[in-house]
Length: 599
Image (cartoon, rainbow, N blue to C red; front, side, top):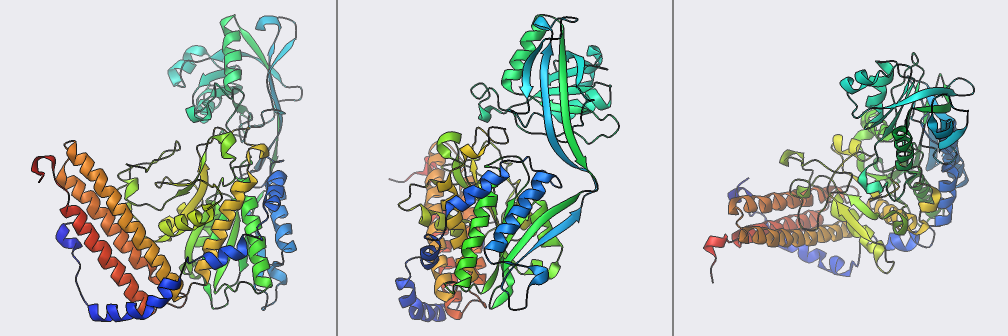
């Protein structure tokens, strides 16, 4: 893209000026596009309801098709019914609040852990010593210790020699002669299972692989859940282990041969059915246009993602109350999804092409409840791909989850990023809630929206020292964080569901303000880079891309107003595009290379 390509082609300037003048009074009176909705939602949102759902789900290891997952789905369904949602099959045409439980046959059995333990056999671990068992791991305190798809050992468990390999490679396993033994290694459990059990006849595997951000040397008993291949032939098992268990086992091996006693109990259910819930508040004017929220049920954690499930449940209750009492009348449909991560949103988008055309926005609530004082994380909005995912600098930072550098053709200009950020900042005023953003990384329910070229965002927390570990229990969840996230998310959707012209223009004004602020930030960063010998052409290109992103984002605001943008709104968008274009040209013109500075 060249500077000439950015230049504004002036047209219809007289019409723009006249229309903006007519809209001036409405714009000046607008204090915030979502203020009225916030005022209705805040006093009604009760985080104790969300915490009740968190506590219920926290009882279970929730994988699709198992008893814990199904019980969690039914819990949500019961709460929806209590809030006034009518089961779809029994609903009348006049019922605006409905829900349905969807059922999908699974190709593999559902899996559920029941019990497990590991102990060193014999005094000092010596082969042939008396059957004294020194505990290493127990399911009662480490419910992530049994990898998904692990089978049960024979009744009473098994005794076998433990061997440690230095690397998860074919050569290392061959030299250790692992057949009939239990294998210990540092590395990926799934890979170790394939090489040691499936290919070389080991009876089971233990693997240590805790990321640094979980601080395993501090939280020594933490275990992150993982899985192994479903293998009905070997009917074996695998276990991820904690730092403490790794130390205990390696110390025992340093003293001589080690025998382990391992017991595993799991339950497979077949045929299995995956459940999902779709709840909707039908729009009164444009029912085929939708705002979609989602929260995935599977995974065994409280923050991940019982907090998202509970928060979305309370949002659905509050929205129902507002509609039933006539306080809100959403013109577009509001949709709430619960199910399996990514699968739930992907199905909702792909199963009905007519429905998909009407999806306007998608928002995922995933890990929205972290008690930041205990977990070390912060609330984040993961943005749709913007130039910060190409050039991550200044105050933009990827999380420890990590993200790939995107190419320019992956950018998705849209107002959604700044719109949701501003709504969260609205909620943060006076509450002490810390709100930050991160460049796009992917990996949750928002990605199917983006793949379908729909705006999609993720609300979450990171970094979390208990992420995916058995330390992610309800004690690590904050009612206050769920309340803030839920209020901001619901007010965001209610605003868009009934946006009129004044609302649309206020959002355009916000977006223009964000664009100008970003251009100034990037200009300063580029000027600093030039002062340190950077390339003027490269830095100009960064500014060009940011300017182009925001110009296109402003143009997408044409879909905010219910029924289509009025001429006044179109004029406001056009005027904002021009001002952002002018600011981009000015920022590029003001860049001076270190060798061409003027006094």
